[in-house]
Length: 200
Image 1: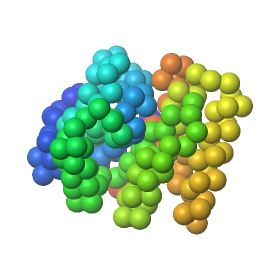
Image 2: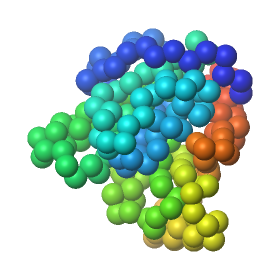
Image 3: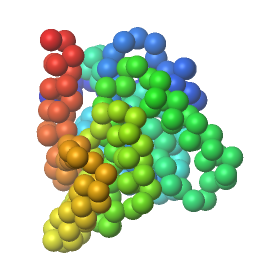
């Protein structure tokens, strides 16, 4: 897939306020500071499209970006940032549950996982939430350039082992690096393939 245009459309406080047209949506979510904004900027080729920050938990709303005037890339707030208040975490939880369980335009969810560290319980719980509710997902390992490849592959293997305890068939998985661009074509090709299947 060639990205010809990527335009910020709207930030919404709830799924009901999101765009009402029927374009397919591809949501990106992960633990705070997983490298989500950097990945989105790498995918679209637009530096600064998604705001990067050294401060976790900056994204608070559901952000829609219209890609090629055909589909939406949706930047969702990260989870697991401990320094937010209980009220904020509860508000986030309701907003995300409502989005994932009620948003008909949601076509696939990309769950970003930091490849540099062993599987985190919060990632496993979120993946299980999506799976148990029948939400299509792909696991995207980020920052694969940051550590020794043996450690990266070891962490990926551990995650697969944990998921196999709950899943009969594992969801698709992709490896990426925002720094080198690795995995960009594979991810965009997957979106293009899904889009094509929707029109058949």
